[in-house]
Length: 73
Image (spheres, one colour):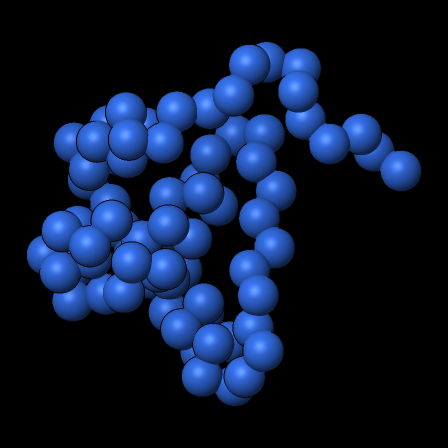
């Protein structure tokens, strides 16, 4: 995360958020305890990861087994 973040002038949290929100079947709720966190989270929406970067992140953080999601309440 840090290496990709550095390449984009972003934070590791922004890279993680940008990666997760674009994954099908993943619902992401980022924490924002302060205004700065909310602004950082919003800026992640502008971050565009390359296919190679997404592949690296997929390999570093693989998905769990299918069907292990959170039940809908």
